[in-house]
Image 1: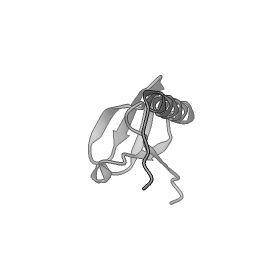
Image 2 (image 1 turned 30 degrees about the horizontal axis):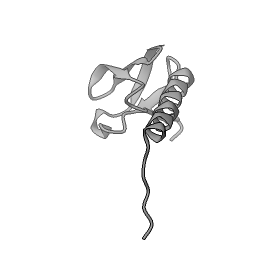
Image 3 (image 1 turned 180 degrees about the horizontal axis):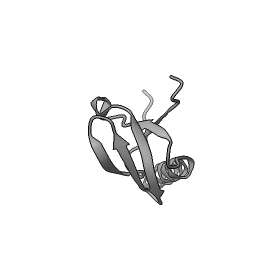
Image 4 (image 1 turned 120 degrees about the vertical axis):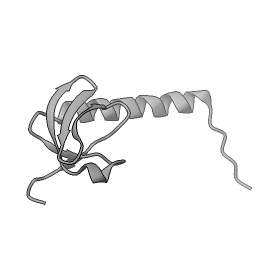
Amino acid sequence: MWSCAITHNDYIFIEVLLHRATREMSEILAPGDYVRHPEHPNWGLGQVQSVIRERITVNFENKGKQLINGQKISLLMVSIDE
């Protein structure tokens, strides 16, 4: 039987990858971009108002202005052509 032991170094590696991915998402987003919240689709379409490091302010059509922590939530970018 095959088994897999996850070490402390594995967790650190995964944390670094996640941090890099969320940092890159914050660097990709800019005011005016359209997004959706992956855990709250009922909030509807959101427009990015500001991006300051990991803090992303988004105005959602059904929820209003929300402050999103980009290190914890990866917003889904939306093309307005969709």
